[in-house]
Image (cartoon, rainbow, N blue to C red; front, side, top):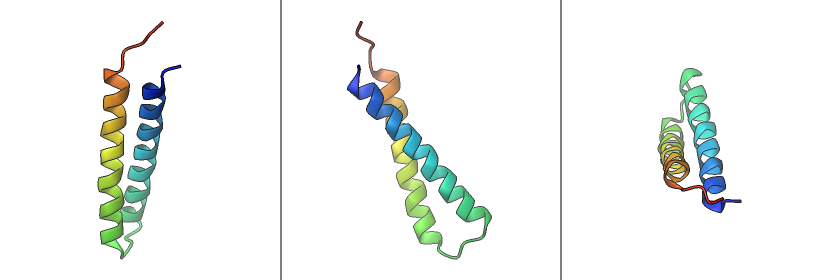
Length: 61
């Protein structure tokens, strides 16, 4: 079991969840834009770092 690949998958899922939350808040015209911006930026960082981990980790048989 590859720990880096698993951690990358978890980061990617958290990033997707955060992006969905931020998008949902923006669509519903939430008045707390600063919180949504922070959540969106953190979600983007999680998403791209998770994708990078999954992509760059070699499979060991």
